[in-house]
Length: 193
Image (tube, rainbow, N blue to C red; front, side, top):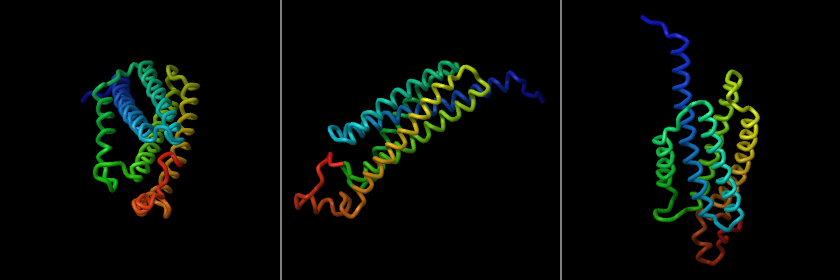
């Protein structure tokens, strides 16, 4: 039985790094698409402006990841990116209490998914920072900026998630009594929060 050489170990580590980073890239594609869709559904409102900014930043973060991958000689697997886009589209098929339209619950679930996505992105940056201890190709100053931005994004999404949850699920929210208030003409305008 042949024992693995140092070359074999490096090759396997590079292969696994490629899988890992391509999975994060697929998640980045899905996250950007979800942010764009959420921003579009809130166009013109304060939440829409915040989501548009987050979508721009997420697109920049995705490009940063692609640049890091090139630096590390990790090829982009376009099939994985396509899977990320497909996963975002499949996520639209969730049960939200409405068959053919958006529900106030849609906003809550999207904000939760986006918050989880940012936490995953942050974990990816932390992994790369740990790898930078033994790989000088990785720019630690850039990772520090990316980590800081991910933390700010997570805070923004948590604030938006909370506002959406209160609006949808609170006693005065759009949830159960929303239809009755709309019928009486007391519904909150779309951009009210």
